[in-house]
Length: 240
Image 1 (cartoon, rainbow, N blue to C red):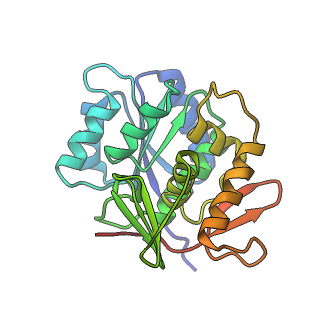
Image 2 (cartoon, one colour):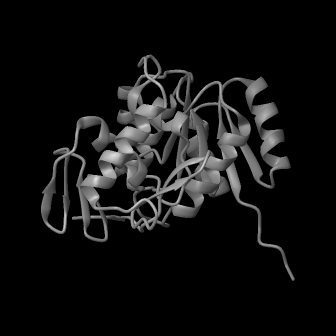
Image 3 (cartoon, rainbow, N blue to C red):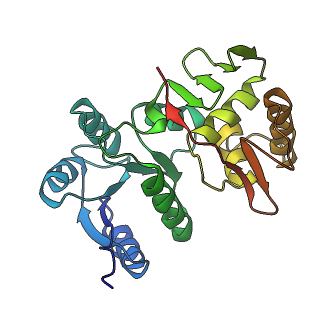
């Protein structure tokens, strides 16, 4: 039986040491890899090479990653994009996601984590459609999340959530089917410098479950995976 063709990755970074080492690792992980050194080269390579996903640094000369991403989305090109950066502020991450990135990973990172993110993004990407991270309204069964107004409702009834619980639900719903560790949620929702432990994540998950009427032993929305973290298990769609 013929093996399915390997997914093609466009890796965009101006540091040769990074592209050499990371491209070798990605190839060993079963991907084809094409390399570009800046946003302009990336846009040209997307047209010439038709990659399945773009892994792109933010800070680059000539045209940075976010500029290239904005141009793609203005042209309604919804190829999956994961941004890489050394900037850890949550506001920077939020802006990139709102501009249409499918995911965001801080340097330095574990290459195994990048491969896991790539596979997760490829699984949930819908060809020719915006990523969930770029949608203002998300729906999952009777659950609706309005990211612009920071409001959630269940079966039409408003849900009262603390800001952190809302942000936690927002992140899980934009990464459905993906196992997300407590450390990753802590980094993403609370930020690098927030002086708390992972127990805070569990507390907010309990708040979400209470608000959603979700039973931890038979969950509809959020599943706990011992040691590994949490997973949003219900289908998520872009709402209107």
